[in-house]
Every structure is written in structure tokens, then in C-alpha cells.
Length: 342
Ligand SMILES: Nc1ncnc2c1ncn2[C@@H]1O[C@H](COP(=O)(O)OP(=O)(O)OP(=O)(O)O)[C@@H](O)[C@H]1O
Ligand SMILES: [Mg+2]
Image (cartoon, rainbow, N blue to C red; front, side, top):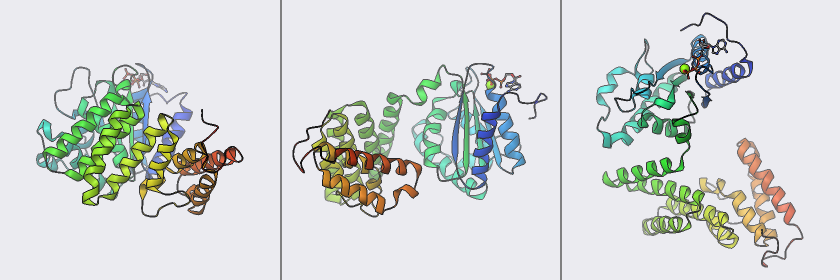
């Protein structure tokens, strides 16, 4: 839909939208959240993105939530995917999708698969407007799908007013509820490998909230389940959550042991994704427990693995770890109790 008057005073936003669309054309995905009060120009920005995407050959879908109009599950998202003159997903697939409320998790997984196939064929722009009125299913899907499909050229643009859903988008209790639902669904349908992933989420959330008893219980369950079955990833996930929780409460010795169980100091274990989640935790815990040599050795391993080239985040972690290790020089004797904890 074209607007008659030109877009005014939005150079920064327009440039950002241009960059995200160009990145999508190169195969990269992104999510843009536009938050502002009524009349702020959110819908207008989304519309201009749709026009530019169409001009760049990027397929677009549009779903707008309505005040009080949340009749069907995932309605806003489904409109964006299955409506319009050229729907992003094949409408014939609609009939095959699980529709019962208890199958919501699987519906989102099916949508993820369909979106993956569509995005592999051509980049997509998915606009979701007025998210403050969206149904809970759409909100839950918007929290999980962009991350799940992060490697694909899908640009998610969501607009919402600051009230209502804005707070819920990041609410921890919502995240905990979803992780609980995921665990229940995995257990009910006999997917134990999915179950530990849900427990991992619960443990990470508990660690973030400082609920150390919950972390211990969940990670204990995960390890008791994983060890006899030889499921290494589940055991490492438990060590990761335990390490974060220990760091959070200042128990650096335990944080060190838990992080070192994933990847020992000086070694960035290959083919172990969790090794990339704890390198700075390991260095921090080593510094805080007086293990200067180990801290330096781990920074050297990070540099040798060339983490800085893998992502800006890993580059930042490497620099921060190096700074931490350097700051510990001369602070404490190797393996002695740390004198510089605070
Ligand atoms: N940057 C702009 N330049 C010119 N006109 C604009 C601009 N932004 C918004 N407008 C106009 O202002 C009016 C309100 O904008 P819009 O509908 O996009 O607001 P909104 O943030 O989506 O509000 P709501 O929360 O009520 O949906 C529209 O007529 C729109 O065309
Ligand atoms: Mg609007």
C-alpha cells in the first residue's frame, strides 16, 4: 500500500531498514522492534519497509492485530504467513497443520519448517503490526521463531505500543511458563531429547533470577539423566547453567570447576558448542580464584582459535577476557585463595 505524503524525519530508521533489507538479500536475517505510542508512525514505517522490500524482490507478509480481536490461536502470525495476494506460505498446507491447543508447540515447529523452506527459496520480510493486541500464541512464536530461524534471510519487523505486550515480550515469568510448557509437551509425547533442552532453559532462567536451589535441582536431574545414557550435550548444558549460577552468587571456585568441566583451561574443546558459551566465565572464575596461569592460557586458546573472526560477540568476549586476565597479573599467587574478590 503506498502512502500519498512522503516519509518525513525518519532518515535514521529508513537507513536501518535499508541495511536490514540489503542484508536479507545477502542471506542474513534480523529482527526490528518498533515501539512507540499511538500515531508515532509505526505502521507507516512498516509500510515503507514493505514497499522497499517489494522493489528489492523480497517477498513480504503482513499481520496486524486488532484490539479485542484475538479469536483464533496465532491469528496475527498466521495472517502474516498465509494471507495477502501472494501468501508467503502455501495455503494448501494450512489444513495439514496441528490445530488443537495442546499441539501449539508442534504448530510453531511446523511453521518454522515451512518458513525455512520458503526463506531458502527467497528472502522474506514478515511485518507484525500492533503487537500489543496480538494473541499469546503469536507473542510466544515471535519470541522463539526469529532466534530459531536466525541463520535464514528473514527480516522480522514488529510494531507495538509501549503498553501491554511490550513488557511481556521480555518477561521472565512468561519465559518460564513457556519452558515449562515445552517440557510438559516433550514428556507427554515421548521426546526426552527435547525435555532436557527445556530443562536447560529452565535452569538458565533460574540462574538469571538467582534461584540457586532450582538450578541445583534442574541441573542434578539433567546430569542424572544424561550420564547413564552418554548424552554429553545435556551434561555440558547442566555445567553451563551451574557455572552461570555460581558466578552470579560469587562462588568463583564452583564457577571455575563447572566451566572447566566443559572446556579445561587452555583448551577450547573442538566440536563442543558449549565451549564458546563459557570462555569468559572460565577466565573470570580463574582470575577470581587466583589461577592466573590458567586464565592466561585460556585467553591464549581463545586467540589461537581466532574467536575474534567468528562474531563480534566472541571478539568482545576475547578482548574482555584478555583484559580480565591482564588485570589479575600479580594479584594473587597461583591456586591460592583470591584476595581480590568483590
Ligand atoms: N514519518 C512520517 N512522515 C509523514 N507522515 C507520517 C510519518 N509517520 C507517520 N505519519 C502519518 O501519521 C499518521 C499516523 O501514523 P501511523 O498510523 O503510522 O502511526 P502508528 O504509530 O502506527 O499509530 P497506532 O499505534 O495508532 O497504530 C498516518 O497518517 C501516517 O501516514
Ligand atoms: Mg499503527
